[in-house]
Length: 314
Image 1 (cartoon, rainbow, N blue to C red):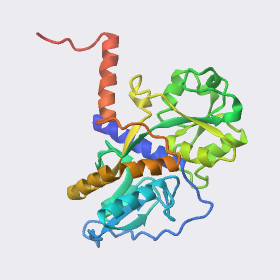
Image 2 (cartoon, helix red, strand yellow; image 1 turned 135 degrees about the vertical axis):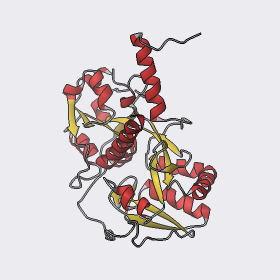
Image 3 (spheres, helix red, strand yellow; image 1 turned 180 degrees about the vertical axis):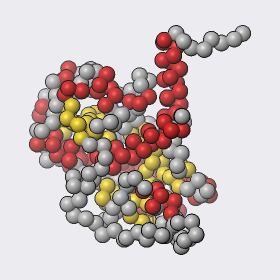
């Protein structure tokens, strides 16, 4: 049961990131994938130790694109150069089947951004931590710092439906203020769609994944304020807002993971500068953070609050 819960959290976060950043205005040039390649018994690419071959989305700014303009692309450049490897890419849209069609099919070897506790991959030490943010226009006169802020109660709030942030939104009786955006990725929308609506005045506040909100707020045509949303995991684990982010590899690639960890240590300052240059909100990494640890802790606290905790025996 706990593994199923963790898998759902991991998948939901991937959908949130992809859902916040998707576009189809100008389709990038993506090599077609051979449906038979990577299957057991069929032809498979053999990993080349001279390569740092990244599995990436061709159109998922600010993370990555086919022109290698994303912040994860720039971090990959730093890591590859440090390791003396040639940086190469395999592109596929980050949606259902992404891992199966890329890293698990041996088409590439590295995922540049995944939650540190994601069981489907072996993950590096976290190289940053981020979460959900409030974004609003500076000329609105709002002062929003948490879910109890009076200005939030009178605002039209853009939010991804079924995302973790909907938990505190509902708990604070703000669901009536919400304008929901779909969780599933829509390739007909630009990656900046929620921030664009904020700039146009169609919503007053965007509750959005931090890297997407921070990046597009920095590029917006009007001044915007970006505020980190307070963590909610101690109230309800399903409302967890902050996540450690790591580089992911296949579980068998232990030697590769050790090299990546060492490269992160040597280049953390460069990584932080890239995050800052892109406007990516980040907070100190919480060592050992895991959604399952939070879930178990919250469950135990709730049991104790109800008075049905299992009594300790002498």
